[in-house]
Length: 558
Image (cartoon, rainbow, N blue to C red; front, side, top):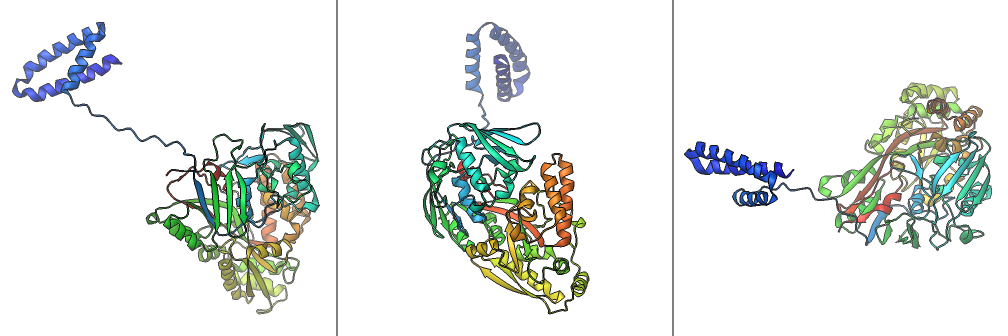
């Protein structure tokens, strides 16, 4: 290598001499070639001569250095991340919450056994590994050692057992109970081992264990108490202060089991219901990072002139018109079908979300989603809608019902209801719109106190997580769906025990066809998850399921 460098430098020296000598060049070249050969011979024998020649070359030839790119800066620690979002959590018991706004806080404080990475693959979390028995009915999990709760207690298998038994207890009112209904018993052979015994194989249970509703609680701290008031998790942040609908203060968990994070000292989460005000705060520099739900605001924030960074990630959560099949006139399948045929779903996307979305099948995972052209009445058909109403004995003007919509989750809900209201006038159906604050909306929703409602429901890569709790007769949110079909029960049970992906896909395709045909709900579209931030906010990873758990990795480059 030394010889090659010297040869290159000598060539440069030669070029310099040629340029300086003008017409005498032939004589100089001849002599220089001889000298070069002699020098190279000497170089092979002595390092001293090499150094002397290099000195001469350096004096004669200007050295040109190519600049190397700046290395990626190492994360900086410290500072408080100022966060803004439009809706606050509706409670702090992780096992009971159903609102997205609750998840977005709880997932920073609590953690489940397993996680989902940015590619939506199940990965270790509080559990380092898992193993199935040959018959698929025993799941053995090894816990990460020395994980501490926020109060300093070490997490053990007893905490895991307590958490899952609480989830399975019907009196808890857990939102995730039906995910784990196949668990018959739980053993704890040692502090770091948990064994789940199932009544049958369940291939979806691992995906269910990534949900915030499956968080692990500190048994000794919360047993006999209200976990909504004793907020102790294992997550990257500790709850310092929660002023409902005002501000939440979180402190970094200095004993967090993942080394090196969080980088920030804490977070200040401001609740600002008007997302245009959130955008103004971002532009003024008062806000570092924001969760944006309104596509209109996201589009403005994405303008390069704003100076902001906006993550726009296709969502798994779906917008849907839920019909209460337990109330007239929706007890008649023909009325539900008529509404499905009368609604142009793409028009809802275009008017309510400015085109920011795609019409969706009941399953939103790309692998499992049914082709839209195979689903009943996914193309608007006014004449068919009118005929269905006539067959059900209704004339134009006979039907009037209310659509319930939350004011802030999603922010497009009222606009979606208005688009549907206008479209249903074409078949003589009258719609009134009832707008509620999110807390009241959730309470009414859980008690099925509505004719119809616009909802934003969570999606999942595994369709069992999306379907079972609503559409199986034993599902814990079956009362909200108000629809029972023995065939769907059979298919959902079969889907849980089927391991071949293509066979599962065929099962859930049939489920979607039945749901579209019977139209207990009218699936509308999937949109995007938007996260806006200052350029100095580094390290955030967006998630299609809307999770903001990777705020644990964020650092401030300022």
